[in-house]
Length: 394
Image (tube, rainbow, N blue to C red; front, side):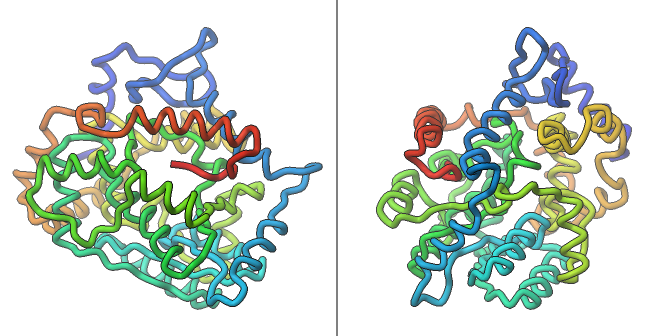
């Protein structure tokens, strides 16, 4: 589909509701749950500021980050073991730079990679080259493709915009499982407030909600998920409360700048840039460049740019200008369309039917959404009072 048609699809989707855009960031009514205050500022801006307060400020003491103290605790917990901590790696900027930081701190991480069958050749090369240079061991979990294909197809048939969470959930669960297996207490995350403080729940719900994922799969597939890494809420509580496993977002301990990080990785580790956020995955690249804008009228760049605006590393004017440019290379989108359809064992006609099916939401399926909202509110109170780790999340 040509860029002009993709943009037209976005505009037509937005036309079904009264269009409005935040006066501070660039989030708009493509998020059906967005709320604006009297000054036209959206709820995402307010939440991003709260995240900065609860998850960044707690690391500071007298203006200095306490990363050395955390590193010392990791080393103590890993004494007598093969590793100090677990880190998930995708080959992307954030996870690679997080691994780079760990080695600078003298830590001994075990890298864990979830191979869902969609890695680009460049992603595989980046993982191999950078981890070899850093001297980090790698554990790769290769998914049962037929199981995973059935799960991805189920999400596409469900017509929800969060059809990528089967991968995200598996990574989340796999990290806890691996930490438990090796008796480790720390999981290092590459997520960061500087570039990811804004992401609407209406776009991406359920990363940790196994009830939701399981319900969608059972609705649209008869296949069992015997080897797919997953974790229920009860299992998560076991990992955190009984096993004492902690998640540490190391990039939140520095003034993280992705452009500067890329320069370091290219210069010191031989890392190669993908040219797009999360484009190390062919499916993610296609999903964000074609399925989201064409079917759902969603341009995920809005969330990314808005996060940068709140962080002060991009102006709103710059973001609006970038949004006027093409969301994807037309030739690459067509190439990915052919590849994805073939890999999912679908004809182009069948894929088009999925694209034309009525749009649904996570609210149309059984989930633990309300329970998670209540737990998150309680957790945020605990973080403010120092009763829970600042980076603990669901």
